[in-house]
Image 1: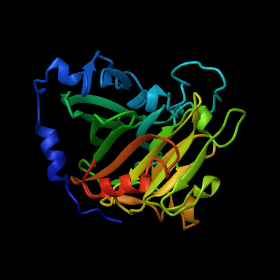
Image 2: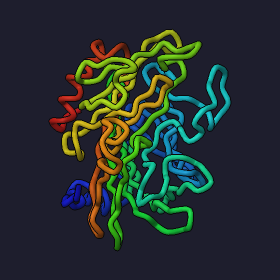
Image 3: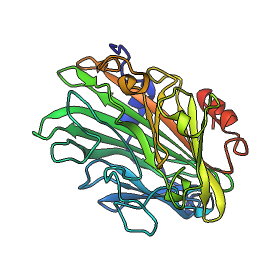
Image 4: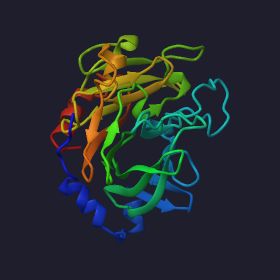
Length: 323
């Protein structure tokens, strides 16, 4: 599949915006604050810790930890930190991240000896605000031999929402350089989160369930197409969940879901060979030299199950450009 879409006008606005808007301390106590420590960004919502964006000296940038409703820890701690009752599998599952397992034949998903890295270049925009906070970052995807395979511009928007609700958007524009970029057919990708161990379906502390927009549930959701997918369970005595929304403008919408019963939860529009038993390479997606494409997702961290959280209604809001 050849993509003909160039960098959107919205992405260009963020790309060339600089500086930080002046915002009163009172409004930030109810809004979103973003602070750079030199190795990570500290993100607070309504004066409370929400997450940290690790961008320096890491295999790829990632958000960790992530606080959900009532400050519930939404992601696994390992390998960033030790915690009881956590499995130590898949050390590359670092909380919340975007990458892919086959980009021009280079593995950017794992942290194996021959894997590539996504290397932070700079921040174009860091802006706190009373209603939202924005991070716009440039990265290079560097293969094991030092070659820059492609680059990306990613924008994260964290919204100040009422009550315990947490909502943020993550848009990633992948840019091809002088050569075509092929996002290869593999299940190992791409917009991913590794959830709190208590939310997984299996295991000694697992309480979780999975449901998608088509009504498919639990283990049957793996490899299925859906507009959204929701993963919820009991954390610290309260049912909480994470829904990921696939934007209608994304390639091959509705996407396939690489969602596992052990807490891995990922949107992947490329893995047709694994998900649908198509011939190898059927899921390849080519970005022609000098062009780009943007992948857009929303994360909705909520209380209750998908019905109590009105996930379908909130997805329709996202699809229509609303909160």
